[in-house]
Image: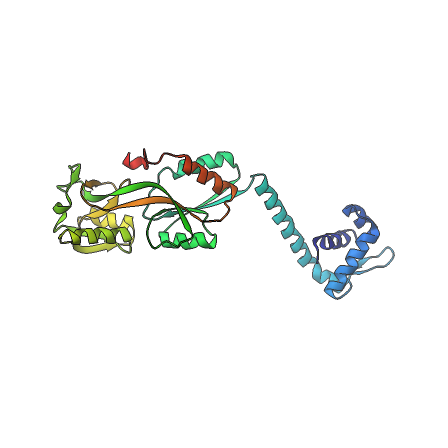
Length: 299
């Protein structure tokens, strides 16, 4: 079944006249009749009863009419969407952000892409980075901001943006709160709130153990927000990264000899062609000098 056959069928159904339908479709009547006959062969029965002055749909024709109307409408919608994308009237873009990374400038970057593509349609996803990497391989995410780890799939191509150092989240009334930095050894014996399933939190724990420190880890959370709520409740301290936004009542202090940092990178799938909007975003990211001001909160 070809789409022009469907179009001819719908025209005859509407006009109930082969001559007028051919004129409407801008084809000769023999060509239209031949196309209708071929469609009838494919569907296994007559669609019209051809009577002089009284052409009408058969039972099969009436049964097929709503289905072929829906088929033709869907094809027209698909063609219209393709035309819009070619003219940049519809530019979909799906961006992933690892849920432990805070990139304040993503809004500015997307705003610039929107100036180039008035029909920009953005989907922004915050999720664990393992999920984002899998979504990228499946084509559900075009570009993501991830932290470099050894667990990412080989096909994930990373472009380093900046490195983040370790900081400690404390309440404003904690003795560490008024200081610019602290030594790792000063954390010995402190009560801790740690984020579950975070590889960088696990790296911090190893660093403390290697330094002979004792971690009093009583509490944990599944997100930065829940971890900070527990710190705010006075249940312990928590590790965080440069630029991590904090709840009111909290502050962060640098650890001068922590020996723990992470590299924040832009991630795409190697060898995959970018959509126009994704290409624009990637070019913008590459043009930035991230080392000078990676995050507004850490500037």
